[in-house]
Length: 120
Ligand SMILES: [Zn+2]
Image (tube, rainbow, N blue to C red; front, side, top):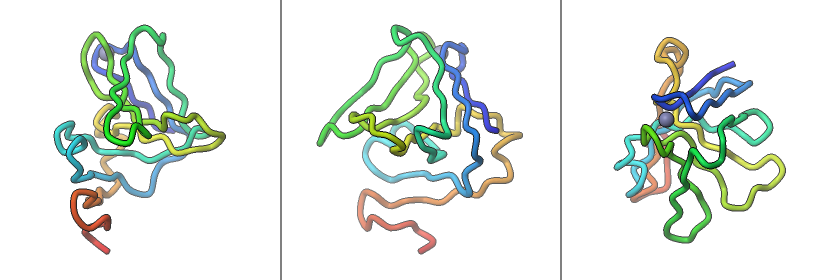
């Protein structure tokens, strides 16, 4: 089990399955956020917060929502606009304790150019 929370604690997330790796993405939004994604699914990740405490940023093809806390501003997760069954949810591992994520390697996904992981 992995836990994540924004700095003020308004948003809490728990993930029941530890990811094999974390992902840093080079796209125009992820590089600005400095996000490090722990990819999960709607079945294995649970986000707990009052809906009024968060805002979602949607851009481009409007397929993804990037959630941040209205109080402390931290980016906590990204989710598909369409909430489907067991679709992917990306949890920002920067909101997790380094003690919990320290043993998980980080891969860079070059969405800005090649759409491949740098180690592929
Ligand atoms: Zn917060």
